[in-house]
Image 1 (spheres, rainbow, N blue to C red):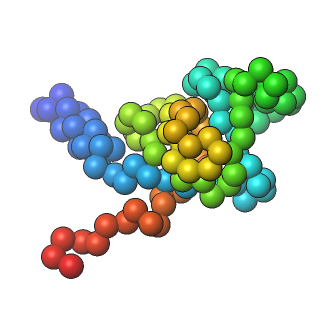
Image 2: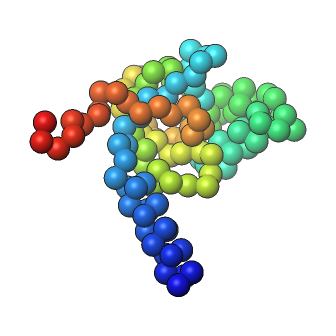
Length: 125
């Protein structure tokens, strides 16, 4: 019985993660631009460094010149690539507008906000 409950809960979470709106806006209350990395590991290193303050504070700045990190404007629309449910704090996104339109990268999940322009009206309206 416990296994069946666990599997049902897992299926429910999976379905909810697939059915959510996948267009978001990146938003930072403190910066005009948001960091995007080419790979998940780099973003997780930056997140860890920012949260624990044990990482190298200049890591992102060191990675900018070699292209592993780039910045996009706060307010840029993105779509989440893959599942929206994840234990990682990094999310893979495709940039939908701006100078980096069409590029893929990884962002900190906390900077993602649902894009109000993609909300659908409830059925029957």
